Image (cartoon, rainbow, N blue to C red; front, top):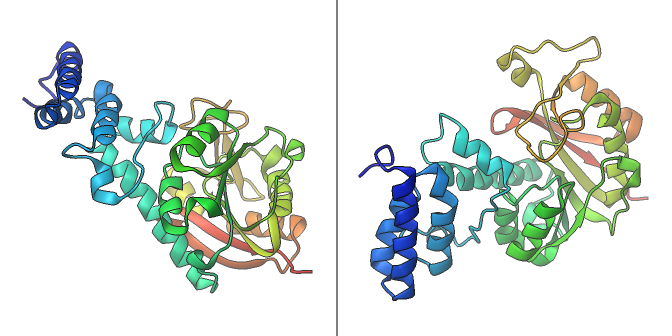
Length: 298
């Protein structure tokens, strides 16, 4: 029976039967039913959670050594689950987080600041942990702090991965940093900010970086703009109030494209002309440009 021939009712019955088998200690038989239920979008996360919790055949934790819990509110997982090119959303979701870790490690090696030698990391705009779980495996939960505007995302990361966390703010100037960090990693936030807060967030994030530390962030650059047939304005900027997020208003968190010249100008204004130590075009996912800023030691 394939995922295309299993009805919604049948999927719910598969889940119920699997739960009954688990209660009876029949784990192998339960796994067979749950793997079938995991193929359907409507029961995918419920079946996944049971497989992972009981360590059944097909558990991603057994293959990866990660905590593979996924929140029902995870917009990024929802993106994979609904995308027509994703034939295996769970595998694609976990692989994407691993790819991000690999690309971050390569980027930091290029500036001779290895991730594994980093004493503390703030993952800002962290979401529900697509990347966090991989970061924790690499450096340890004790080194990792997460922050997001969505309180549920922070709470999920804290309870699932054992990291420190705090809720962000809509207005950059309202945020009070609980500390400073050797590395602040901001993946795909500046690719969503409107012009009104783009430079302000860049300025405020400087206070989160320890002296001598790094800020790494990504943007939708020229290649992404061309791919999406977007024309930048005279300053090299474009914003539309639409994104994959269901939790944040589009005017606050939409989709943004910026030229390298726009980014360099804002960096010079907010951090100083010598703070940009490295940039790598199309670095993350072959789609987003990466920038590395260093805060002066004194």
